Length: 113
Length: 240
Image (cartoon, rainbow over all chains, first blue to last red):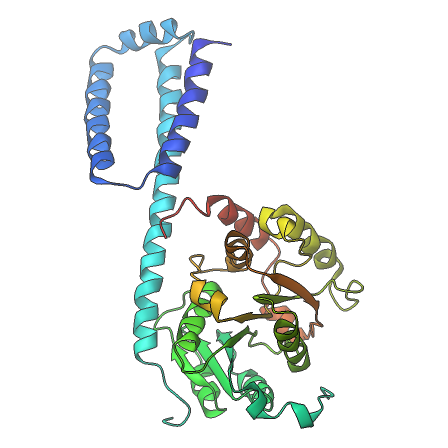
């Protein structure tokens, strides 16, 4: 197995575990921000010196830097999709609780109707 | 038609029973269904799940208590709302979930309540696969529903044959402990998972489902089974 394959599979598993266990506390939000800043800096570097990505890619057993970028993008996409899905589920639940409170407040018994 | 002995099913006998009827756009049948259950059960709460028609008003006129979601949330959310309303009523001890489309039979409910009391159970759920496979049921469903029941770890553990039956009878312990978070159709498996987690005593009772054209048209498409399995995998990882 190539280094890149090990890395990709490991990062998929780590992301999944992180996402499913995360309770979205202030600390993990801060780490997401740190990660985002690092990602932006890496992106700028890759734009300025595109050939360097190929060097990194070769270390990992990938031929071209562009391919490495694509793999990273796929991982990032999976992470974003799943985390958005989980967040929507959370919101949906809160929304249901809010609607339920309103519904119970306005309950009508047949005698008053 | 229901062959009930009126001598022992007077409203008095079931004064501690509350029926929860979640309804979404059921105006054409709701009054009839409510009137039918109220021949035996005094207390019915209809949860109008944000219907666009006058389902709620008709249920109220037919003698049900009415709780109305301001927006459509899904059947799971409606059941949770109805149970929360019913469990706060003074004297409520037995709770029933009953579909609004007229596919359940009142005499099955009576039998399930008697069994809940006689066998000292926490919950009795209906099964369509009790004695023999129901002839009226479309063939694909006849094959798929028992398969889905076997796929769910909770219903396998409890030995259930039909995890997606809308007819359930349960006591105050279950009503108080119930906290359904799956708003849509995945609540049926969630319900069973909650029962398994709390080690509540459960039994299945064979019931008959009246597959009318109306209830078939309102039924969920089978592809929704994929959502149910997926939500089951995510369950427990979500914030409660």
